[in-house]
Length: 353
Image 1 (cartoon, rainbow, N blue to C red):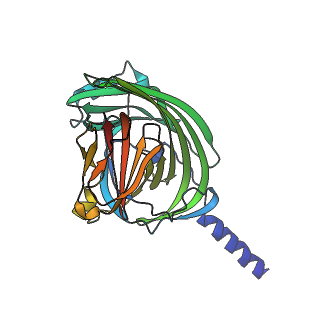
Image 2 (tube, rainbow, N blue to C red):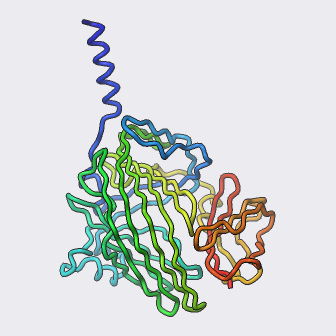
Image 3 (cartoon, rainbow, N blue to C red):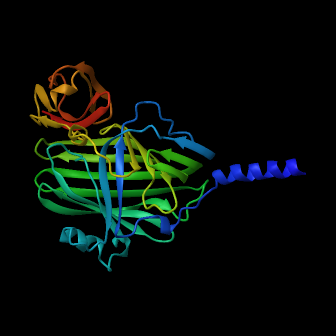
């Protein structure tokens, strides 16, 4: 009898280590919350695709190369351009009336265009967490961009085994420069629960996998060139009770912007200036005809340079010891450049005339 009780206790203890959790409205963003997150590079040793019940995901060996602060604000914050407020705080438009917003880093979908003051706008209810749009100051013009339909990021309450699908779309006219639009289909699958371990700590977590099929429409007016582009993003996100953002997320991207991005909750760390400043390559001249130069420190070379076309096809893959790249054989169009050297990985966009 004693042996049976000990065995039963051990079984119950083991099960408690992998208790299923439920993510509800109280576990998602509201104004006046802020978090420090670190970005890291996957050196090919992480198993982030495995799901299932009672899992242990160990990402404790990650090394951060950049940190950001995520600040959730009210939709009428004085930090936000007034044109955004008018679009996302309108009681006559409940579909796009946001409950919270947050600034974000955003890579321009079109080279030579500057995006600043970028905010994502979200609506949180007891039944769903959705993105209703974004605002971006594009080449000095603040432009609100509403998603129609909106993007349902997560249905609530969220439990292991849940699945759902949603469609969303947006478009933006960029004065004198062109047009950019996206159509999306998001497939959510809550395929795992257990313990996730990061350099910041250990958490009971629910794992959500979102496969997002994206159809982009790009048109660059100055060149008179338009591109339809199909790509896929796969988001692996681990949610835990008491945090408004995933404790860790891994995003795989195909096509333009191809690569893997790893972000996890963290505390403030001291990072080198070079590590913190290489999130994007400055490329010149851009547009280019025969050669382009990568404005990165010389001590990064030799490095691997990969160039992808607008359809995600690898068109150049080489080891280079120089900052200048020969692109004379590439046809006119949009390209993504990835430069990688061991612990450093940085990207940029190029127009080839």
